[in-house]
Length: 245
Length: 325
Ligand SMILES: Nc1ncnc2c1ncn2[C@@H]1O[C@H](COP(=O)(O)OP(=O)(O)OP(=O)(O)O)[C@@H](O)[C@H]1O
Ligand SMILES: [Mg+2]
Image (cartoon, rainbow over all chains, first blue to last red; front, side, top):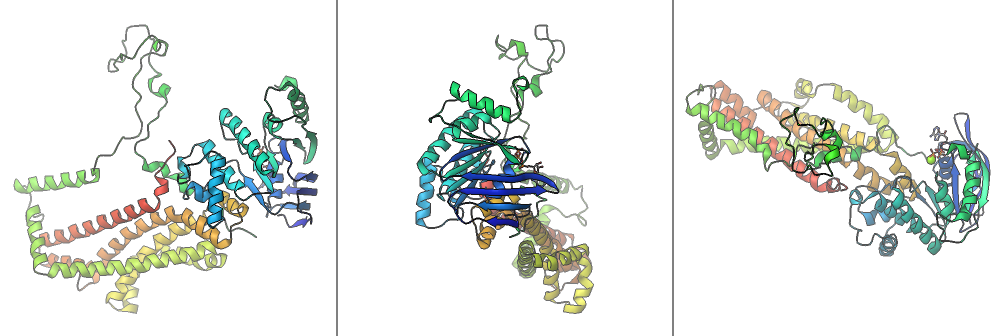
């Protein structure tokens, strides 16, 4: 965490107050105020370079060397899913899932988590032997097995093909329904945000430019016409108008 | 809270993973066949290309089709590495049999073999071989231990790096064999100085490669370790060290080669026993067959030790052989 950030006390969900982060005089996050209630599924949109990853890394306490200030409270158990699966190539899939845990019980949970993401039977495989989608599912299992109160994901499906991505959306939503962590999902894909999240934020010029609650039942279809309205509003907030498309 | 990862070198682990598989294929079809001229016309240009039977109606617009050729050299032959040396020996034997070689300079292979057997049975060769092996083994073991220990100390701690890295780089700049006269003065002309020189020849490549691999750990894995809440000890044991093993093996193989090189030089100049000494004596008496026996044994040692390291490497780094299909 950046040195000048105070720790807020109530770690039930995410709470940011005046969170500021800058790189060499360039302010990327400019006083962000944000509350994420426990168990909420939030998507974060924004242009490339708008600071989505910076925000996520701040919440994950991964930004030791970044200058900044503000107040930040996050739960104890936080898991992160990266854009790459980040499996250690020298550990078998199950051992990757169990990274940082030990004991028979953890192993049992690890196997369960792998089964949940559809990788039963691949416990002994090397990460090199997995397809991109499978690797990302293993990464999901690794984050689940720690029973996180908050799941942070930075474009976790960005490197996957469209078909696999849709399957992963379904999987992620199912997992969320079963385990109910708070989720902060960074994405550049407006449709992904609308289909998955209950609330979509747009990061713009270092602040939350739009905070949109999406009030449609799940599972959602990409073709749901009522979602079109949300899409328009989000695209407008992102500065994409019809003639840009 | 600072994590000790210099982010200059990334993904050294995966860099040469592809080098191992000789069998991959996949070339782009267009790259290979895209140049054919006008399909319908009678082929006047390249007669060598068979107008294949696969040229069905569907394929017609794309022109002639050839089977895609893989760019990889294909499957290695079994024991292919032996082909060259065997051919060389055959040539040597043929030339000797035809009386084309001066037997004083290059004796026939069977003469060398005979000499070898004689030397072995009269007991001088086993003693010399044993002496040489012992030197190499001690020097190698000490060099390996020192190289790994120093690399760990300097790769994992900032203090260690400050103390060790510059010093080793300095040591590396001095040709080790140039230290021989000094070491003889310090340690006498006995075994100790020989082992010390071999140890230095070994520790330098082991240190350099292991240290580079340790400090070049992928910063993405550092992040992962933080996210997973790994302790410092676990981080080192489960991520840094396994990640540095490929680099260590590069150093190990260079070290093995280095130990033989050091041995040869030391024994030919400064020994009173051992293989090199045997060859040195043979030179005085003009026994080229004995010299060749010595050289052959050095060669076999080198080959065997390198093969052993390769085998160990394959086992330890077995995860690298599997590539996504
Ligand atoms: N380590 C760093 N050093 C200097 N500048 C940085 C660093 N990390 C990020 N930045 C800058 O901060 C800004 C925000 O970066 P960030 O990675 O948060 O964007 P992003 O919204 O995640 O973009 P993308 O969608 O492309 O991933 C960018 O302008 C980037 O250049
Ligand atoms: Mg980003």
